[in-house]
Structure formats: structure tokens, C-alpha cells
Image (cartoon, rainbow, N blue to C red; front, side, top):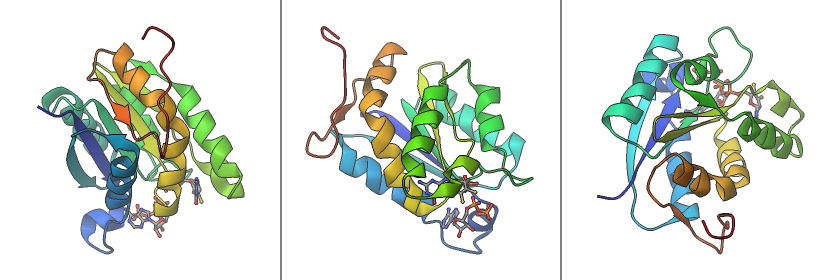
Length: 176
Ligand SMILES: Nc1ncnc2c1ncn2[C@@H]1O[C@H](COP(=O)(O)OP(=O)(O)OP(=O)(O)O)[C@@H](O)[C@H]1O
Ligand SMILES: Nc1nc2c(c(=O)[nH]1)N[C@H]1C(S)=C(S)[C@@H](COP(=O)(O)O)O[C@H]1N2
């Protein structure tokens, strides 16, 4: 069975069909570029509702058994932006370094990168990573954190993920 990766778009308008979801496909394309080996996407599009996001994150982790769940959208300061709150609610451990790094990298291209509260955390054997909603942010943010993702998944008991070295090199400490 190839590892599953959850792709959760959090957007009121994409979930209502007011615009086509470009975030989910952008996450899929970025992961396809960065990972080698078979993996199976599990795609969902939900509105910016705390309970709905928590429920979908929980299902992707506990029922689907995803090794990694990538969310896009709902990380900003607007009243309906609650993806980080949902992530924090379902995770046993938070990994604030992911958000710190993604904001630092994004700041090189856009000053409003500081508005994103994107974070990451671990639920069981699943790593959850938040990305901003702007489709243009997705590759940039994923590329920044991907070197640490496979070893993190190793450490929490997930499957061995491998990266396309021509694009990004996974870092594993010697002997790991
Ligand atoms: N899934 C998506 N597909 C296409 N464009 C998106 C998507 N999510 C966000 N965007 C674009 O990025 C902008 C900022 O994203 P943000 O998550 O703040 O959306 P929003 O204004 O809260 O609206 P919504 O939740 O309805 O997507 C949006 O206004 C939209 O232009
Ligand atoms: N790399 C990158 N990060 C980015 C952006 C961007 O365009 N590129 N947009 C910022 C903006 S304008 C906002 S409001 C926050 C939160 O976006 P979200 O609510 O769509 O998650 O992400 C920020 N991070």
C-alpha cells in the first residue's frame, strides 16, 4: 500500500464552488514534483469552519491513516481564518519551526507573509502542515520545509518518504 497524503483545501468560496479550487491541485503538483515513489492523494475541500476542519483533519489522520496532511488556506488574521486553531486542537505536539521557516522564506517575496499564522504538528503517526491559501505560496512554502518532512515522518512511526534529489534533498541525520 503506498503512503497516503491528505490535501485539505480550506476555503469558503472554493467549497461553495464560487471559484475553482486551485490550492489543492497546486499542493498535488508540488508534492508530485518533490516526492519520488508511489503515494496516494486524499483530497478534500471544506469551508472555514473550525469544527469541520477539525473533523476532516481527524479523519485524514485516524481513518485514512495519512502519513502527511497538507492544508491550504485559512491561516490569516480574518475572523473566519481558523485553520491553525483546528490544527492545534487535533495535534498532540506542535512543531512551530515549520511556520517560522515558511514565514521567513515567504517574507523574501511578500511583506504580508507575517500575516500567516501557519503552523504544523503531529497527531498519532501523521504530520500536519498548514500552508497559506494563495496558490502562489504553496510551492515556495513546501519547498522550504520538505527537507525535514521525511525524517519527521520517520520519527513519528510513519512510512519512509523519499524526495526527488533534483528538486529537494531530504535530510536524515547519519545512521537514520
Ligand atoms: N483554494 C483556492 N483556490 C483558488 N484561489 C484561492 C484559494 N484559496 C485562496 N485563494 C486566493 O487567495 C486569496 C487569499 O486567500 P484566503 O484564504 O485569505 O481567502 P479568503 O479571502 O479567506 O476567501 P475563501 O476562504 O473564500 O477562499 C483569495 O482571495 C483567493 O484569491
Ligand atoms: N509565500 C507566501 N506566503 C503568504 C502569502 C503569499 O502570497 N505568498 N500571502 C500572505 C497573506 S496576504 C496572508 S493574508 C496570509 C494568510 O493567508 P490565508 O488566510 O490564505 O492562509 O498568508 C500570507 N503568506
